[in-house]
Length: 252
Ligand code: 6PG
Image 1 (tube, rainbow, N blue to C red):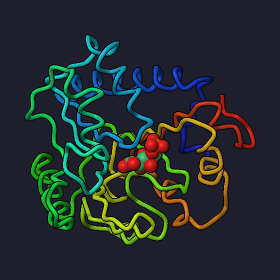
Image 2: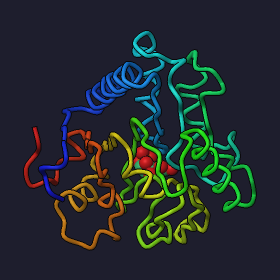
Image 3: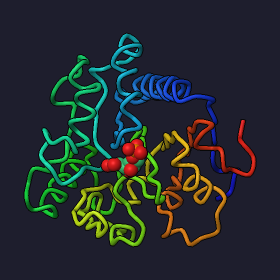
Image 4: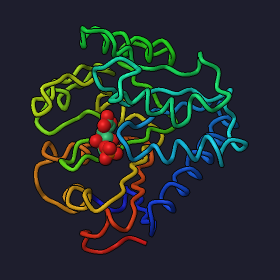
């Protein structure tokens, strides 16, 4: 990955990583509201962002224009919203249930629908309607938060899965053989249409994947996170020292 198009920020500890990420969200939100009257964000799932969401709901509480913020999800497990695996449940517990955001500003994936492709199609329509997209257009989220899996996946774009090839739909159901389950995920065209994409990567267990993504020469499809290259947007990797520990040089 060419270093000129990517900002890599290494923070010493996980706490410093989440503090910096919270500052990034606050900065992006206030800039977007000034420029366009609203802030659209797609939240990452998994465990890493929980600490960030907690910070935004507490320390960041008074710095954010909550009523002008609109929350989406970059991906979701194929489970109901109260399932322990649900990304919505994690974000709701950590942040959404604690902040004065209008319920109508939160767009969760209808992943309780047993028909995963139907759930994906519904969410696809929700995004298209919200952004008033013309056919063939992609939404420009102000900020998309992403994590990195140990296998180099991001959102629910796993190595070797069909969703990596999707060029026109915004949201698809993606069968993940190793988990024997469907996931529902934004596609690469959506991620790459964002104004800003920020990866949050913490911990030594992510060090091999981070090195492979940022410095490796394996085919991109083996490390889907490497396929995230916003066409006209910023790409920021926010990592802690543990995650960066295998990089050939630790970025500043
Ligand atoms: C999910 C996420 C996924 C996650 C990575 C990292 O639904 O799990 O979208 O892409 O960001 O798997 O997960 P951790 O933060 O739990 O390590």
